[in-house]
Image (cartoon, rainbow over all chains, first blue to last red; front, side, top):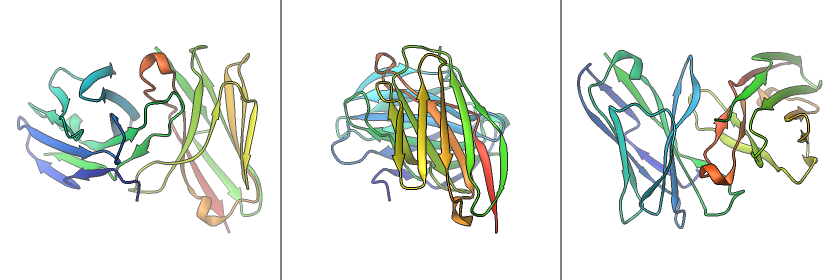
Amino acid sequence: DSGVTQTPKHLITATGQRVTLRCSPRSGDLSVYWYQQSLDQGLQFLIQYYNGEERAKGNILERFSAQQFPDLHSELNLSSLELGDSALYFCASSGSGPYNEQFFGPGTRLTVL
Amino acid sequence: GENVEQHPSTLSVQEGDSAVIKCTYSDSASNYFPWYKQELGKRPQLIIDIRSNVGEKKDQRIAVTLNKTAKHFSLHITETQPEDSAVYFCAASKQAAGNKLTFGGGTRVLVKP
């Protein structure tokens, strides 16, 4: 157990819908990262928050957005879902230093039908 | 941005033999190189990492080497065991980019008993 929690574990929804994925980082970690893992794209960085502020952005679609709340949990919102959005979405957290390990949560498997 | 290439994509070895996975990166400013192991349906878990000021690091049967000049790093697993079967990902990051991880495409390792 990495100490990072994600809910829900599985999500099945239809095209065009909107979903919210939730992540709670390890106690004391200020940084939260979101990654998407699909079969043909591998692990892709989406976005990072540090202590409530957006720190870095990857190739995140405009239909996707995220935020980090004062209690440091984070939510990833995916809207106007397409079949291609089906993937495993991982959240990771880390401390503040330059060499801190990123601890991954168990992931949310999203299936868009 | 950073680009990480990983080879081979699949690797089959006999139990007890060694396995070597190689990665190259493009951004000379990257300074942290972790390796993650991911079992089917599970979260990526860090197995070893190396910083840019170190050339080699070893942890029991696992070792990582880094050549900053050539911008490549490698994972070596000796005396492989069936439980080493998994997908391995290399990654690179730099503090200036918020420490986001750029992953290689992954190597599926199969250890045959």
